[in-house]
Length: 636
Image (cartoon, rainbow, N blue to C red; front, side, top):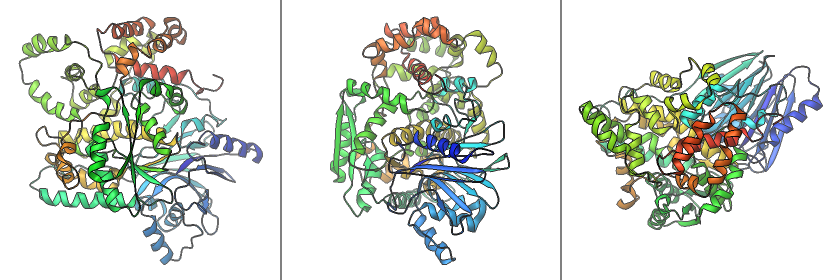
């Protein structure tokens, strides 16, 4: 596990080149505090920071093949490397280390560009082929590990695990991408492939980039495929699906127990993390501990469920309670490690959990991905209810029901009834994908039309905020409405929110997090399941809950979903009141020149007065302003 970076070059003296490479690596020291390495040769420079997990003694990077014609830096873990290594040795390849990364080099020698299809793991890879003078960048199938790149006006490429490393690359002038800002305000993150910076892109998951002589081409090597999961009348029966999925998930967890350093699990007390913890405990050859943080704000706290799950599994469970003041103390640290604006407030408790976990272990297993595979969110139920709601007479909906909902008293509690009801009627008449985005995201088109100053609205004329939604829906290999939404969530919310959040929060604490649900063997199997095995009527995670009954009690399996949130609505009125007022001071917003200060002041005042719950919009804007005020543009 590490951070990687590099760039192609011409006519740069070696001393300056190495200095740039080291500066880029040093911005990611949190990703790899144990070691750093560099390789510089004609045309290409590669660098890395290493967090030692496997092969602690000889796993130094960059790695090279036998004749030194191939060089590799990579971030991640290859879980099937023992089998790959065995097969490659049989074919005559010689290994000089015990690291998983060396298998990538020899696999490339055997398979060429197709090497990545044989890898099971999470990774961001940069491989330099000096004979063919080409660079290959590759990212894992689900996007667990990040990789960014840019090609400057001279045709040279630069890449890095984190955007802040690219800010140290002197042959590019960073600037704010207004279309990306527009997307951020809607989604609460910048969707792939864009970044907040002009000219810098995220390599999409399941893709490779092949760069040679100033030219780059993208190649997709994998995607989720729902096309065969239409009806339970085809393929396996329910019991067979359950047995096969459990077999695959067990194998996935076992692969992720490989480590030369202490390993634990995140345990919230929800079904996903509890299942992963139970399977890890059953299959590990050494004691594993689980970790969880609790909150004094009861509507956000899950500590009692985590304790129940840990006691049932029989695992040693570590728990720490946090109050508001402790969470707010880490806010400046969170601002510091963010690459681009990020509006998901659960980043704060995720950071605290990772910091707590890192006190004792270097690797943790998480339950991320279960909701997106098995339709675990309230929104999936809401889409089903929306179908019936829209059958009601328009006069009843718009004349009676919606006015009543809009007059419901505002609550600051987690997933409060008024919050969910008001979200439900937002964009209810829109196409499913756009409605889903309005429910999940932050500012809608009406709000942004009032938020942006006129010159920026003019600059955004013709920009389609929902292009990522339309593009993914069009590309999805899905023949069922539920599968379209699951694909959309996997390609947007999971990929660009949840996995980014966990990567940044964990690596900021030098902790590696592994995600068993997102093993591609599990994903391939679940996507081909019939939709009714995921959402049956209004019962979420139908088959996953049936599978979990072998390990967990009913009170854990059937509990209401709480989510991993923080009391943002309450904070804005209380502990963060002065900070928000200062951040959104009209003179400051006016000087920046992007937003209308009067509109933001109205949003803030309405929230303070308890008239409207503007928590999501205000937090999204707040995080952008904090990012913009940081060290993210040269000379700022």
